[in-house]
Structure formats: C-alpha cells, structure tokens
Image (cartoon, rainbow, N blue to C red):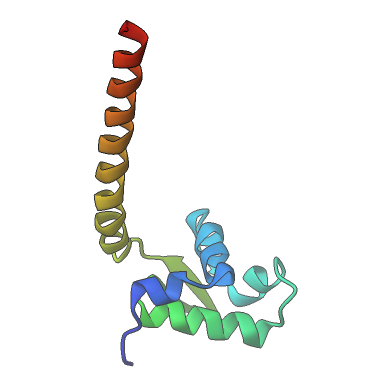
Amino acid sequence: MPEVDVFAALANPVRREILVQLRRGPRKVGDLAANFELGRPAVSEHLQVLRKARLVREEPRGRERYYHLDPRPLTEVDDWIGGFERYWKQRLGDLERLLDEEDAT
C-alpha cells in the first residue's frame, strides 16, 4: 500500500476529526460514521487515507475492524510547526521590547 503524505492526510477536516475521536480509544467504522453526516463507505475511504499515512492502524476482531490512532507520524508535523512557533516567539519578543522602549520614553 503506497504511503500518503501526512500533511495531505491532515488537510481534510473529516480526517482530522476522525483522529480526534480516535484519541479517546479504538473505534469501529460504524461508531466513527455515526458522528458524521457521511455514510460508512465514505468514512472507510477516509480511514484508508489515514492508514496509508500511517496515522491509524487496523485491528481485526472477529467480523469487526477496530481503528487505533498512531501518533508517531505527527512528529513530522510537530517539527514543521515548531519552526513557525520559534518565528512567532521571536517576533512577539521583538514587539514586546519595542513597546517597552516606547513606554520608557
């Protein structure tokens, strides 16, 4: 199964919400689909994209399949966002120093 870019998988709000739901623990497709105005096949397609991005894993239990969150690929996203966090902290620090200088005068 070819991999999907983590950022591409996270670009869709339905897939992001599925990940939020999976933070609470493993879920079946039907349980996940009940929280959307989508049919079970559409939710299954979103889960397939998340599996290809390695953000979820599938566990067969009898006739059911449970999906689990695998947050490890999110480290790539965290690393990328971290660069922007450092940028904004620096910019806000510069603004704070400028405002302090203006108050002092």
